[in-house]
Every structure is written in C-alpha cells, then in structure tokens.
Image (tube, rainbow, N blue to C red):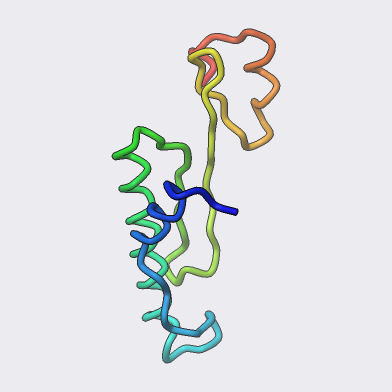
Length: 97
C-alpha cells in the first residue's frame, strides 16, 4: 500500500483520458500530448524534490522511447543502463561518467 506522500505526488500528475494507441491515427496525437504532459509534470516534481534520476526521449511520432537512469552511490553518479553499473562498486572516479 502506498504511503501518503506517494499518493499526494501521484495525485498531482495529470491522468490520461484518451484511450488510443499509435495505430489509432485520429486519437494518437491527443494521447501522446497527454503522456508528455504527465511526464513533464513528473520530471518537474522530481527536480523540485531534488530527485532527478532519469532522462527520456522519443522519436517524432512517440512510438519509440529511449532513455537512461542512474543512482548515486557514495557521491558517484552511477548509470543504470548496464554498461557501467559495476564500475561504481569498484571505486571508480566521477571522471568515468
């Protein structure tokens, strides 16, 4: 069960109301706009709480998304994309990132 802080944070993210997918040419642009609005609000909340931990981007039509996420361990920013995950645990420097 979610705690009160989580419920409050989620309640501030706009809900998506359009039921559409990329194959629905008429409604997909509206749905994609709603998804962007929700993501933007989520990122704004995270930055305001000093909890910025991911980057996302999509292609022009919103059908392919890529991104990175990270965590901080012993004041080192460690990417969690699989390529440098073990580096943080072996005592690498921030120059590696």
